[in-house]
Image (cartoon, rainbow, N blue to C red):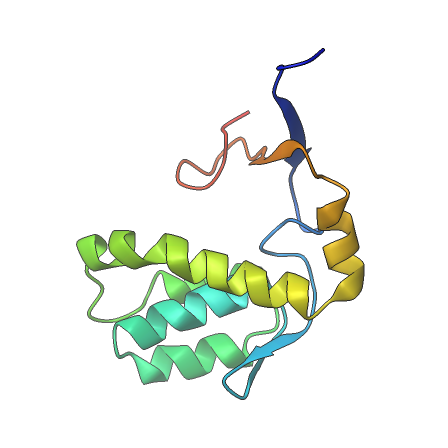
Length: 128
């Protein structure tokens, strides 16, 4: 049907579109194991919390990285809201441009809107 919007739904780390999907990429000499780690580390950097930033980089699991990200010192919600979309976009750009197999998955979604089908994430998910 022409004109009808098409969607690509994803949820959980097995999807290459998930922030938790395991992949290696680097930025400014720092290696990351997933986009969630990049996001949480950049959150710590944004607020000048190098101690939590180091813990996030040392954490192997996205669950732990997210938990540490919630503990970032000097957090300011207005500053985070003004920067988080750019940080996530930058992380995904790095993730997909440095991992050709993931980029192929992304290119195969051409013409669709990506939707994180998380039933619990009120910020990034569609709550479905």
